[in-house]
Image 1: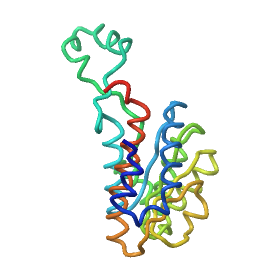
Image 2: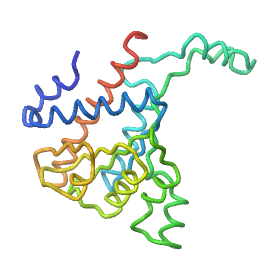
Image 3: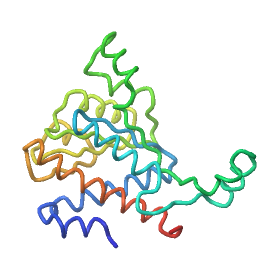
Length: 210
C-alpha cells in the first residue's frame, strides 16, 4: 500500500500537497540512513502533535520492527535481557522539543521565551538531523526562530502549516500547506497527514521485517 496515495483518496483536498508530502517521507528516510534525529516543535495542539509523531516513530507503528540478529545477540549478552531481547522494536530517532519542561521554563524565565525551541535546536542540532516545525498559521514566533536556527546549522527543514504563505514556508525546505486557515481544521488535516508520513516511512525502512 502507498499510504500517501491512500491519504489523497480519503482526503482529495490534500492532493495538491502530495508532492510535498512525498518529499517529507524522503527527508525522514534520508535522515534515518544518515543516523540523524528528527527535532520537532509546535504550540498547543501542534505541540501535542509533535509528541504524537515521536511516539509513532520511536517504536513500531503498523509494523513490529524487530531488532536485527546482531542487536538481539547484544541484548541477550546481558542476563537481565535474555527473556526480553526480542520484545524491543527498532526506532526512528525523534525528539519532541516541547517535552523539555525544565529547559523551556528556565530559558524562558532567564533569557528569552521566544527562543525556547531555538535554544534546543542550537544545543542538539547536527547536519544529519531534520527539523519539523508545526504551526497552523506558519508564523508562530518561537517555531519560526527554531526553524531559522536549524537552517543556520545546516539541517534540512520541514513545516506543516495552514494554506497561507507564511514565515515558515519562506524559511523551510519543504512546507505542507493544508487547505484551511481555521486552526482546528488545520489540526484535523495534520493528524492524517503525519500518520500517513509515519506509515510510509516505516514501510520503506522496515517492510522486509514484517
